[in-house]
Amino acid sequence: MRKPLIAGNWKMYTTLMDAVELASEIRRLTEQLRDVEIAVFPPFPFLVPVAAKLAGSRIGLGAQDCYVADKGAFTGAVSAPMLRSVGCRYILCGHSERRSVFGDSDATVAAKVRRTVDSGMTAVLCVGETAQERRSGQTSVVVGSQVKLGLAQVSAEEIRSNVVIAYEPVWAIGTGDTATPAMAQDVHAFIRETLAGLGTDTLASEMRILYGGSVKPDNVDGLMSCPDIDGALVGGASLEVKSFVRIAKFE
Ligand code: 13P
Image 1 (cartoon, rainbow, N blue to C red):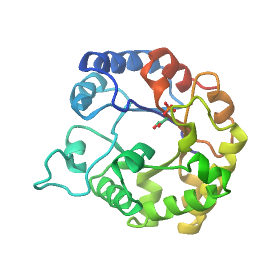
Image 2 (image 1 turned 60 degrees about the vertical axis):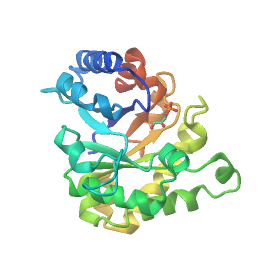
Image 3 (image 1 turned 120 degrees about the horizontal axis):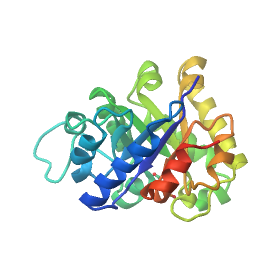
Image 4 (image 1 turned 135 degrees about the vertical axis):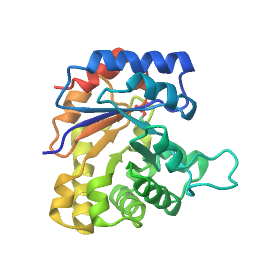
């Protein structure tokens, strides 16, 4: 049985005060939830204070990115072992904003997945097509290749135990234009088939595939009712306690 994962990607939002308050409120209002796993991905400077607020809770802490080396003269970069040392359990690898704004290639993403797994954390590998790619019928080609190339440096066993996939169509991110449950389900089923091709059928059936892109309280239930959607990676709506908690209480 795949336990659903509802994750909040705070992107480059919140101040220290906002972040700490958001974390405490999420903790307070989700304490009773047993059948869902929750994780938050605050900006780097707020990881430590948020970790302190979440200490002893079941909420997972994650980072939005990491660098491809563990240490060295890389001014401004943050490594996977550093993130592990402050209590992170997850790292987002290859979010579409990292790919498009910061130029992360599939090879870079694969190296970040490798570093994350090596450091004892779970990599959340993000994949998704642009509007143009969808219009031209390229969705499966693009998503299939991002999945395969992103996982190129990890073994089937590591994928099963230390990777979560997040399907985030680029055209749905921050636009309010979410994929319909049927559209998302199609791609999720395709991703699961792609995963089956990388290892055993057990691998594919055990792995969690999250949907991301304008997930809101009013569309989460439809998305979560799809057989291959195992959770959500939420941007905007994760910054508002009420919305995020309602999403975590999907029906
Ligand atoms: P929105 O929920 O704001 O569309 O963002 C999705 C996302 O990019 C999560 O990683």
